[in-house]
Length: 408
Image (cartoon, rainbow, N blue to C red; front, side, top):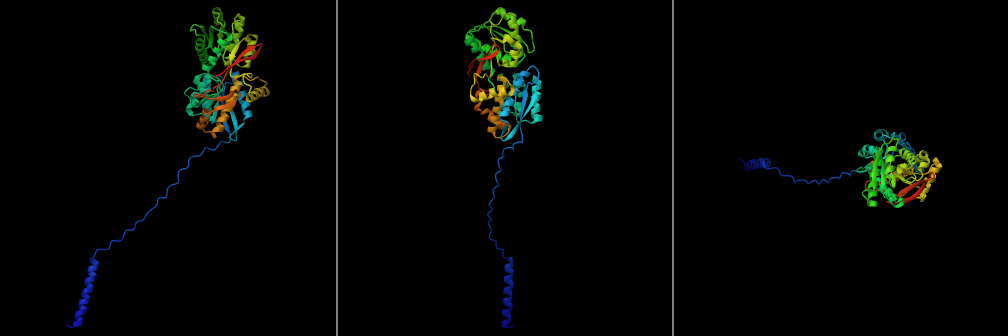
């Protein structure tokens, strides 16, 4: 074999072997690539903005427009309307008043409250001037978070443990003490007989607070000579008054509604108790109808009230008094002033809340401090009760005379 052929064969074997070895060699491990992924943060969830304002802001008014409490409801409604005329808009929206008659009945008052929630869809409620009706109303409204401001309802239970309930009036513990203070310091009474309407929460509560304060102020646990009762709608008080005449107290305290008080005063005059034995009552006596019914028998009678023009002479009070005279040819009194102030305090709260959200209105009402209404600066205590003074009024020659103001 030639040398060239040997070389060619050898070269071929080398080439074949190199191919085989290359095929059997392990594959090269590729260099890993590191990919850095930068997470894009999700945009923060925007805070929910305030609900858009409705075209009309609805205020429910729950009042005693018929039944025995009609005079109270009528005067309250007049005061609310006068305030609405003064401020017909809030937050740039017109205010619509939706009046509902509870017919001077507790059950009807609760039904009106439910109607305001379910049908009328109101944003807040004004009412009720009667404590019993206000209590019934708030048992419905408060659990629903509906803010409500009562005008002249004075029993503490109206707002007790009800964070959404307020009132534009002082309460009976203060009113009872104011009456007792007047009885002791002005009349000089050392003994009292109580003649009380036991059918309503208001007179029962007021009588108890007066009794406690009178005993404290006189320092005599026996200064209350007797407790005599009747019920709303009674017309004959001869038996009670005859016994009271025999006891001969220095004063008769008779918390009741205006019609019963007027009848009591007439019969007391007929039996010879008055004018020598003075009678005293609470703010439910402060309606024109009492003097109209009692006539001359009302002379010498005194009572506590939420307002008297001579007790409040600041510009807002003068505007209210003149407004009542111009719009209705009536003198300002307890029920119109509490309706008037209740409306304006509520409008001020809605304005500060900046919305019609129930909780926001409630918070703004609770924060009310120094709002100037017809009775001066209005603030609320921790239970939603207005902190205000209590005027004492007397009747002389058929006219209301300011006695003095008992400060809180």
